[in-house]
Length: 125
Image (tube, rainbow, N blue to C red; front, side, top):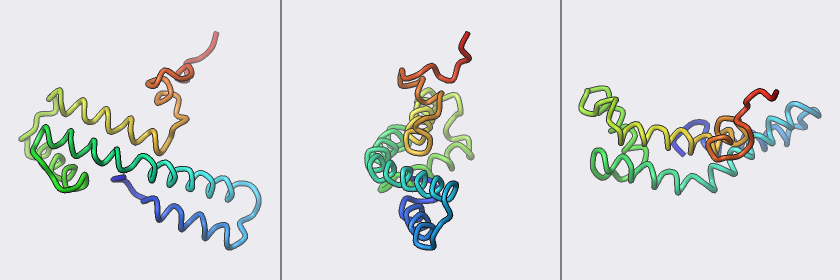
């Protein structure tokens, strides 16, 4: 996807930790989490990038990659060409944030609540 660290870096670092005999406990958890993020990024990334290009394309025109589209979107926001209250921009930012949560933090309570799962982290009576 568009964020760092990229999936390949996560995989490489997790492998390195495992190859160098990581101590039981925390290092394995970190490696497992990194591999989970990388796995979800590889599975969901192409659809995410396609959706980003399409949504930004509707706002600003076509771009070759999601990265180029995002850079152009940032420039348009900075320059004032695109207003922050534009409903298509707001929709894009929300959809992008939710898609990133699906990769980075799929158990995050607010993300799960947005999908109709769990209680959204609300306190129980």
